Structure formats: C-alpha cells, structure tokens
Image (cartoon, rainbow, N blue to C red; front, side, top):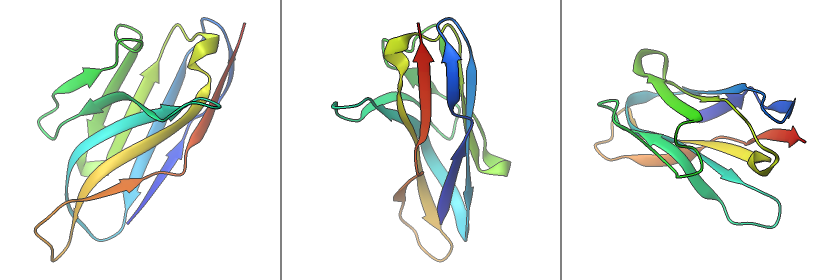
Amino acid sequence: VQLQASGGGAVHSGGSLRLSCVASGSISSINRMAWYRQAPGKQRVLVADISNSNSASYADFAEGRFTISRDGGKRTVALQMHSLKPEDTALYYCYQEVTTSGRSYEIPFWGQGTLVTVSS
C-alpha cells in the first residue's frame, strides 16, 4: 500500500490550498484518515481526522479554517485550507488506517509529506 499526497505549495497569508492523498494497493477497507503536520524544529501534530462514518475532528488551530473530507470509493482524503497563516507553514502528512486484502486488522500508512509555505 502506498499513499500519494499532493497539493502543497507556496501562498501568501490569507490564501487557500487543497491537499489530496490517494491510497493505492491491495486494500480491503480504510478506517480512520487524517492529516498531520510538522513544522521545522517541531513535533508532528494532528491537524484533522475523519472516521469511516465521516465524523471529523480538528485541532484548535484548524477549526473553522480547514475542512477534511474523504471519498472511500476513491481511497482519497483531502484537506481544504483557507485563511492560511505563516504559522501554517509545515510539511503536511496524510495518514490512513488500512485493512489490506486477506487481513482482518488495520495497518497505519503514511504519505510522503507535502510542503505548505505561507508567506506574510
């Protein structure tokens, strides 16, 4: 299983970006999907996550500005980000809990990280 993230880039403060992450491989089902981020010199933190019943939760800094969504049929999780601030600058990682074909348990997978840079 591989996760491919895309959509990062450089924007000015107040701008918007949409990140997307698609899973490929021998997948039976996907449970939790999420986006994390890691700023330079800091630990990786949860931005938002969404269950397979589409219940979403957000970090305080993301609430009201970011929206996470998923398309199970396309094995995709997206993060729409608005009103971006310089402090949102970070590597953004997608995460999916995948049950692979032939197994009955979930395995966590990470994408490669996509860079978001917000200038003032």
